[in-house]
Amino acid sequence: LRYYPFDSVAMFITLIIIAVLMGMLLIFNLFSINFQRPITYQHRSDSSVISRWLRYVLIVIGSAALYLGYFIALQQDTTFGAFFKIWIVIGLVIIGTYAFFVGISEIIISILQQVSKVYYHPRYFFVVVGMRVRLKMNAVSLATITLLCTFLIVTLTMTLTTYRDMNHT
Image (cartoon, rainbow, N blue to C red; front, side):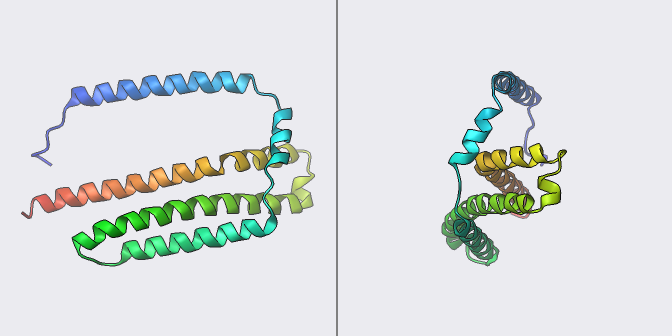
């Protein structure tokens, strides 16, 4: 790491850009939340209903794709072979994560609605209904956040491995 120069000016410029973007997103979200109406949630929840068998199919496809992707990633191979395998692994993990999140979110909400002590309790009714709508709308967003975190860990690991191996050459 001593051969890698660190520029503090570049760090501060990056932090300022991130702070400005986060501030703009905060202002945009505050305005969009202010103008939302609760009745729109009810209309949105009725329009996106996934059939029961499709939920289980999505979970099976997602689980299989994730298992196969991580299984291929753990196989030892040459550098040239690993370069081509990484694209297959990335595709499988992306497909598996999206399918799994969409399927599992529907199952969790269905289970919560079947438990009458939770669903019909005055304290939790609006929470469960609101969660149902938000999870249907944001399951793909949650999967995207998960993928970004996973690829951040992979990138950090690859960077640290590269720096560690630079001293051995």
